[in-house]
Length: 226
Image (cartoon, helix red, strand yellow):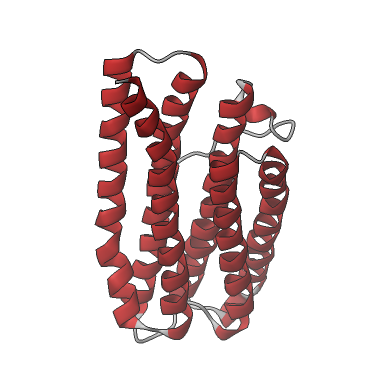
């Protein structure tokens, strides 16, 4: 009985990593669809999002059953509680990828991203994807040094958001109202993906140390929903 319980705990990490892989693919495909106007790829990202939602539901159900049956304490309890929150962050990241794909579909065949902003969006996507990949490594290896680096690198995504926002504000008639609205949302989507990656590594910090999730890099707050 105890062996089965320990096996279930180990599989939680595998389930989280599987979810992260699905989100990583969605992020890459949604960005390609957005920048290249690939309607078919956008549709595939949108259609895949319910599968990520289902993975969260299945994982959370498993965790609740373990909490009810095993009455875990200490590290095991932290693992279960942290996994609940991490699955929520990953599901939300999947939703944000879906929002990017929905934007690509809605504006097709017109581009949602003006040509002069392609490089910035591509870089935001690269940084967000790298943050997710590093967060996956942190989940697998409990590497707190890498976790701190994820937090530090998140500032680059925030800086790009501010850069694009300033250019939109100063652009005047260079943009349509629709382009301004779409770009404002898109940069926010990518920024929130980065924030959720930070939330993932903070959960591992809590799991390993038992400290508050806000102490990994000396401050900050839990990400909010969008």
